[in-house]
Image (cartoon, rainbow, N blue to C red):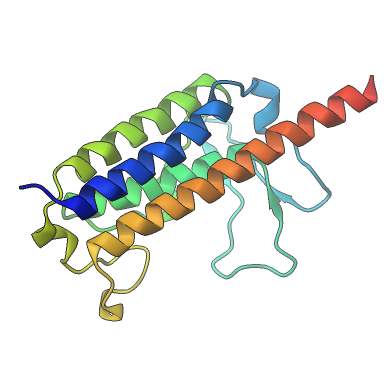
Length: 178
């Protein structure tokens, strides 16, 4: 069944992803853990090779500046959550979403999640788009799957801008240091 809303949401996702891809293609390993200031959230490697994010159940004040590593994990967490929701599963607790690590593993993971979300979008009819959504908000808010898909596009654009800005800041800081 054709859905103009789905097609618009898919087009918007692809547009946002194209901006994101510009930065994904240019990320260097050193970009991921670079901390832009004294108060940053990042990913921490464990002795067993797993990575742990800085996290708080309520937003701290002041809000820490995330690293590219943290932002890529956060993006992967909520992309996993919307894909899981589309499959009828509950969103995973953030602590249960593994981050694959610095560089190409993170980039590959994000690209795979982008493909999975596109596949979800491609199969959404109006009946599903009008159905209730439980992520990222509680079910009793009246938000729909269409609202969630629009939120994904906005969140992707925001995270892409954050990653791009951090990448550019690190590059310009390194240029000034030489």
